[in-house]
Length: 250
Ligand code: GEK
View 1 (cartoon, rainbow, N blue to C red):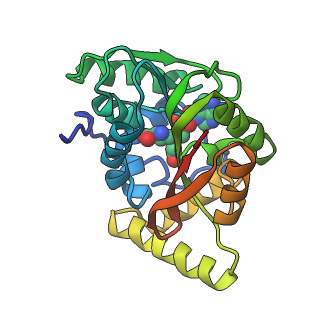
View 2: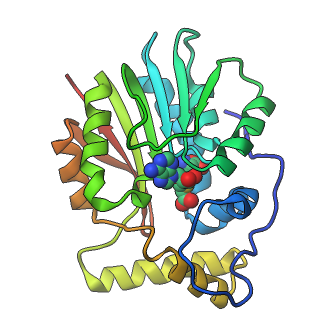
């Protein structure tokens, strides 16, 4: 397992000065600083990415398709690529942000593995899915409107082969208000420790409020089971960020 941190490391200062509270969008300004933004904002991101390679290696099946849905700059796509030992597998990264896909192409070209990567600038709600052994939604489902999440997961469940998996990483919320308050404070402390100011934290929070809708772990488990996955386990948690493994047995 090698460290494939993208070479370009521009610092995220998008919310450093006072600005109008527009909703957050995955445009060119975000794509430019994305590696720095996600590493300093999502506790555990730098652990989850290499573990996606380990999980892929365990569950990928020869001749199958692997999907990274909401691939951004391809960090999890490349982790999957390095976990796939079969040359007859097809690896697909999907994102509906043109700015992300454009930069993702660049990072894929710099990577030293030779399994082809197909990048689609498409909505994950309608992108074609079939014959899947490993699919990842690494902090993407949280941006899909809640009423459309079951349909998406059902399409993934239907496309998944027996023995196949979905890796689902999400920011979650907690049933208990007391726990919600503690975990949110710890997350904000994590961001502060990574150099974000109080202004940046509060402005980002306001911008993302209507766009990133977290749900409870119970909501996720229940919906994954309704979508056709037999087992759901949490393999990683840091504060209010978790990664689940959903397994389809048959
Ligand atoms: C990583 N997985 O580095 N269709 C396609 N793409 C979408 C959709 C949609 N409906 N909604 C959101 N996206 C990556 C990180 S970031 C997470 C994923 C974050 C895309 C959106 O354009 C963005 O690139 C990505 O999902 C979410 O492992 O920023 O916290």
